[in-house]
Image 1: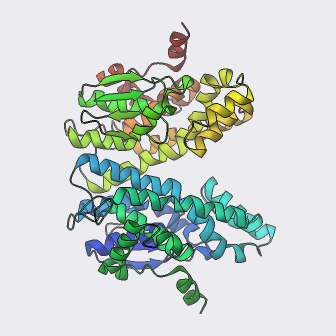
Image 2 (image 1 turned 90 degrees about the vertical axis):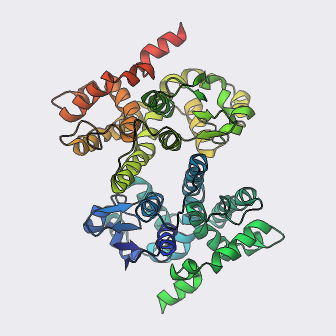
Length: 247
Length: 247
C-alpha cells in the first residue's frame, strides 16, 4: 500500500505510527501542502476532504480519516491488537479518539498553521488566494486558509488555542491511573491518537509535561518515545523538521 | 439498559433504530431538552457533551455518541449484524456515518432548532439566557443556544442549510447502485445513520425524494419504512410529534 501524507500533520503521524506498530510495509508519498498537492484532482479522488493522509490500497481502492484508517489496519492485520478486547472499553476508546479530533486538532491547527503556512500565505495576491481557495473542497478549510492568509491569529488567540490544547493533559492524567497506557496494559489506538498532540505540547509547553505537573503523562510520554515504532514513524520535532525542510 | 433520549433528535433516533433492529430490550427515559434536563449534573456524568442520547448500562457504566453506541450494540449483540463483513467496506461505512455527523447534522440542527427552541428561547431574559448558557458544557452548543435565542436564523440561512442537507440525497443515490441498502444486501449502521435525515427531508422537501428526482433513494425510503424496527423505534413525523407534545 501507499501512504500519501505529510511529515508534520497529526493525522499523518497517527497512521505512520499505526503502520509501524503493525510492521506493515508501505510506500511513503510525502505531500507538499504548501504547493496544494492535496487539492489536486488525483488526490481528491482518494480523499474528497482534501486533507492528509490518504491510504491507497494495492487493489486501487483508497481510504481517509486517520481514525478510520487505523481501525482498518487493525482489522486486516490483527497482530499486535491495537484495540481493547472489551466492547465497552473499545467504545470509550472510540470516543476518546473522537474527542482528540474535535477538541485537540482544531487548536493545534491554529498553532501549526501560523508557523508553517502564514508567512507564505500572507504574501499571496488576492487573485492567487482566490485561485487557491477555489481548489479547497470544504468550507471549513477554505475558511482556515482565508484566515491564515488575511487575518492571522493574534497572540491572544494562539494562547487561547494552546490553553484548550492543554486540556488533553489532565484528561489523560485521569485516564492513565496506574496503567502504562490509556486503556490499561495494552497500547491502543487511543495512545496513537494522543501522541502527535503530546509531542507538540512537549515542544510548545514543556512545563505542562514535567513529572511535577503531570507525572503519569510524563511517564507515558517517556514510554512512548522508547517504542521502536516512534522512531520508525519519524515523529520528528516540529522545529527540526522545518529547519530540515528549509535547508 | 436505559436509553436517555429525545423523540425528535436524530442521534436518539439512530440508537432507537439500532436497538429495535437488534431486538434489545431497554427502558426509555425521554429527556426534555427545553427544560435542560440534558444539562443537569446527573446527565452530564453520563454524557459530558450534554447532548442526547446517553445509554446507561446495567452495570452503571454509560456511553454516548450515536455512532459509538451503535457499534457497541453490534459488538455485544452480533445478530443481526449491522456492519459489513469486509474490513474495507466497514471503513467506508464509518466514513459515511462521520460524513452525516459532520455535514448533515449541523444543517438539520439549524432547521429543527428554529422550530422547536426558537419561539421559547427568544423570550428568555438576558439573565435567564446567561443562567442557561452557564449550564451548557460545550462552546459549540453555547453558541447554538445564543444564536437561536438572540439572532435567529434568517429564511436565507435556513434555505442554505436545507440545500446543504439535501446533498445527502445524490450522495446516497450514487452509493445505492442496484443494491437495496447503502452497503449492498445487508442493512447496516450506514442506513441507520441516514434514516433520521431522509425522514426529515421527506417532510421538508418531498420533491427531492420522488421517484423522478431520486429513484434509488425513494425506493430505499419505502423499504426503510416497511421495516418493523422503523415503527417500533418511533420515527414519527416531526410536525405530528410537536402537535402531540403541545396537546
